[in-house]
Image (cartoon, one colour):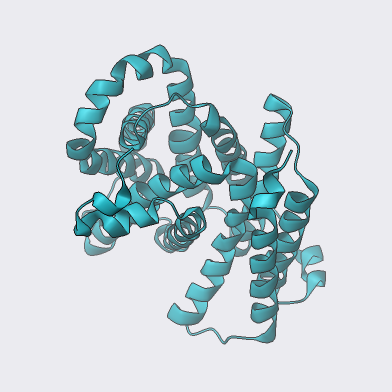
Length: 311
């Protein structure tokens, strides 16, 4: 392996970032929080299936010039493990993404953030069912504490609000997207060993191909993408941040610390979502925000620390 100190100075920050799993997973949550806020904002304006398909086509085209040499070299390995690669593409890119965008047309942001809080539990469940991997006490404690922090923020410190929340088909759809992404996260450590660019370029291309027939069907029903400023800005954001960068960061974070230690970072998504509401929508910072942020941060640190990986 090449000594990082011998690399050109321009690549030193990239090499450093590549070995910072907590920062990578935090940035992933930040980009995904923006994706949820934006998806709710443009629901009814940008067709969800078309948005998902175009999202992965755009990501693949951005990555292809950089990934092509690695794809050619890794193709025999990818072809040998084709069923696994298609499953990763379907769960982590096609179904998960399309159904979550679609769900935002039927549910409220509060419900989506509540359901998002269950993400780490789905990862843990899949790991237990498929591979017999159990949460360590530290991981379970961390997930519980961070979940309490998320609920504190979303419910504005009043847990009695839970009794008044009703769920609809959009909530079920959003929940199924988390089940799908939990499976993707659990399977990632069993992926074939390839270059990171080979992995993400293949899965984004395959995900786009899986979504293409549904996007064509959506177009045939008269639900079509409008080429206006809002649509173009939406596509630009989702292609660059929650897709290209976030998935590369997430995959690398999983590789460095494993699914159960990485899963609690899902709880940062509603934290960043509430912070965006404060900064962009003029909401006031209140005590329950600070309490919730502290609980989430404490839970993530407890669950993600190295000692929690002992098993």
